[in-house]
Image 1: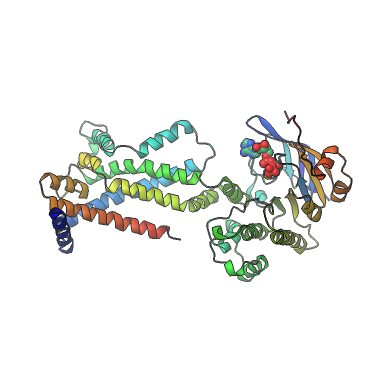
Image 2: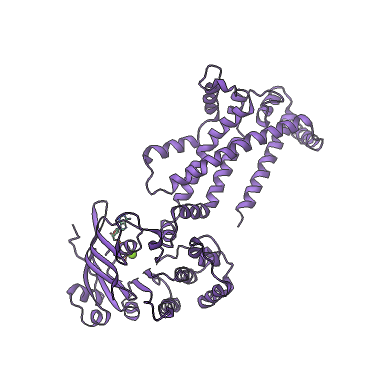
Length: 251
Length: 229
Ligand SMILES: Nc1ncnc2c1ncn2[C@@H]1O[C@H](COP(=O)(O)OP(=O)(O)OP(=O)(O)O)[C@@H](O)[C@H]1O
Ligand SMILES: [Mg+2]
């Protein structure tokens, strides 16, 4: 099966400082890749590149067989979406937030489907509520559903359940798992790239792990292998919960 | 104290009596200020949006201080500038706008414009950057992004319009200079107040002042209702 993303020498530099430098990374269609690494490793930067929100300063990013240098075509951008750590809901009602991405595409959410979503989110009683008044957990559920109703080919998750309670963490993991499963078995499912600080969460949700350190891809392995027999001392130290920090940053 | 009560009584009499001279002054005030506000909004919102939505404003180091200075421009200086432009020997003298309501609208538009641009721009720039990223990530085109951000900043945008309205309806220096306070032609509430005060008609001046306040309140009440979610 061909991969959906190919990254070659992909680099991102801010104000002359290189914060990401990935020699090679493939992300397979329908796989769930966890991206691990200490704070500042470049995980969010990687997701912004995968979502075509920024132009890389070097290297190539191939998506679905196409490497586009300049502006990404809209059709292509719309196959990928991100849920950020902060829900970033609009100052509108819960339902208006839920359907926002669809309306951008000139589509609507059928009333029955909308109600089903609200039920699954446990938000049926808050449908008309102004979104900024939601609790953190409720807001993040809306943000996730807003992405899932688009049925993207790729769902990028940037620590979506950091700072949430176990109930909401469980709900979010379940919603993502269901979204992957609900897909027609003939088609390849949704590809997930999940940035998390929670090693246990990565174990629960990921097929494969990419471990970043100081902007570099230090290790990439099957989840089972990575968690039981990490190949690099850095990954091993990270899994032990030691602060992984190299004095020498990337030049 | 007596003057105050007289003023109130006079105001009541003028308003309830639909005094034609008063109606004319009020009508012109609304036409000039409304026209200027409309023009400044039509030009200022897109301009403020274009500047506020950029990550980096071209020559921002100069543009922003210029706009912010414009927000505090003394109206009388604007009036002088417009006067010189429109006077017989000025570059736009041929238009023969001086001492007409058009000249007053031009002057008030110039006063209102930096307020609308500056406050719209500030409202847009104070939106959490993650929201912008999120909206793009959800598949917005440039135009959709701009529209969504304007809606997100709607309270700030409305505040910009309110501030501009307050700035020009109460303004006297510019309309006096370029309008000339000609009875029946370019006399508005503020210039009428100046005149009546000079003439010693304190009650009438006060009555006009009360009507001006009433108008400002009514307009602000309307804006407030608009911003109520
Ligand atoms: N727009 C930007 N401008 C300048 N520097 C940036 C920008 N975005 C990120 N950086 C820098 O790039 C580095 C990597 O940031 P990034 O947000 O990708 O890290 P991260 O792995 O997601 O960290 P965390 O786990 O704390 O979220 C950091 O040093 C950060 O300060
Ligand atoms: Mg991050």
